[in-house]
Length: 138
Image (tube, rainbow, N blue to C red; front, top):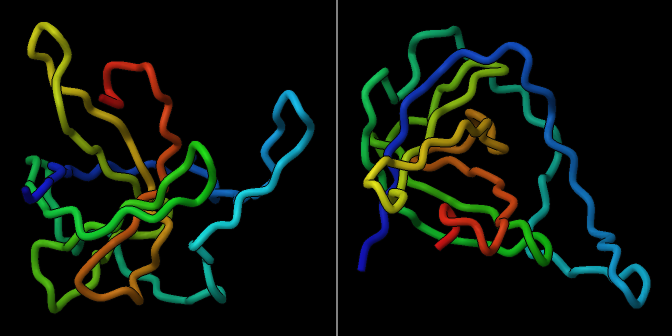
């Protein structure tokens, strides 16, 4: 079954850079999670605001891969609407993601800033902390 996520964009100049950690505190002491994710070398791929692949309306895009980063964090890779172009999200831009619904049928909507750069063509990556037990994680 093909899973999709609906995306809309918002400007968010206050969003900070994502930090990566592999040490996980636990009752038995700190344990380390061997992640398949590596952010790689810094990439300079800046675009002007307003030329991204998403508009103000939600657009469904397919989920291509899920990569574990830590015990409670995953890297979700999604296709872009046009596979021949990068996401073209401006620096410090964020997107609203919608998927699933609560018991009353209200959609779950969350803001995310992709961890991938505009050098990645045809897809983009979102790093998400999975909080099991919450309705939005089911």
